Image 1 (cartoon, one colour):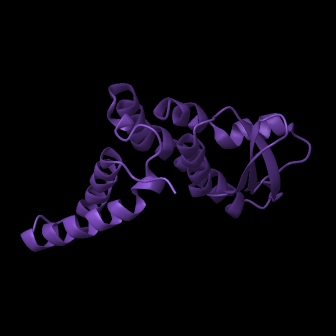
Image 2 (image 1 turned 90 degrees about the horizontal axis):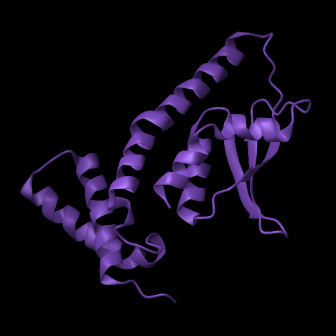
Length: 175
């Protein structure tokens, strides 16, 4: 089994600490000490699974600003569009609801980028990423259940509509 390195533990600790501060929203000394202990224990046990490659890779300026843009602008924009689409379908009986599974190709190769895109797709209403699989030729595919898997449209067009700009930005963050 892979052993966690000190930078990997430190990076995992920092991520856990940021989430601890966001969840507790307190600078009380007792809560900070409890959080530090809990975050250290979590980091020691999970760093080898959590950090792959460069532990502080997201702190590089290009990746950091891409991640900021993704989480503050790009993903919320796609989320609003998906919410609007689902709301329109719910309140308008004329709009199609053809649920089904779509096989969507991706150019991403980094595991973190693949997971970010899969989770982002799942978090948008009307879609759920069911599987990420590689074919015999090494191409990666997402299997996505969506609210409108129209059989008449081309799978490539449906895939691009589901991924939107999320794939491009996930690739920028995890280069």
